[in-house]
Length: 225
Image (cartoon, rainbow, N blue to C red; front, side, top):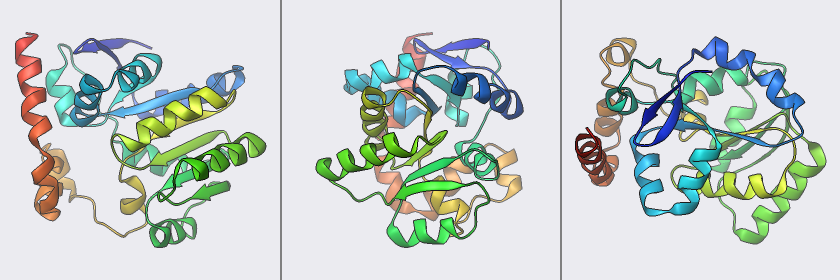
């Protein structure tokens, strides 16, 4: 697949359907793969945490947000993480779900079509994470969806990478909340206008307090030309 540089990271330029066609080949390889639905927050987290930067360089990166499209020197096709997650949860691939509040995860599990062979809500300590990884090693899911937010989901993917030899781990942020119906996604016209980020901020004002990384990201992109 073709990649485009964004702040020294190789972002894959593909479509959702083309990406999904690569899954069987990836699963046929005797290794664990990671896929990152990339946005400015993750890139700025990587600026501060070398372990996340290392993860990004070792992963397939797809452009989740308009910020990544803006920063790219070439045209990229956006693949929102929630749309990727929805598609995978309608597939025949064996999935393992990690993240969200217990009530949200329970609600989600009643709505999806894909075979879910294991799950755990997003509230766990290091000892419990070890048990989750052991469960995954036993069950060998094709897809592990990690919906914990930045940077916790990236650190979980790092731990999975150290322990697993099969499957694809994907960080999917708040996708479980939206797919379960707990939170609403922006209307279609807002998405078309590339203003979904603003809609989410206005819907959840506490998000705005964390938007300092956006200014940092814009500054880094401008500085790098």
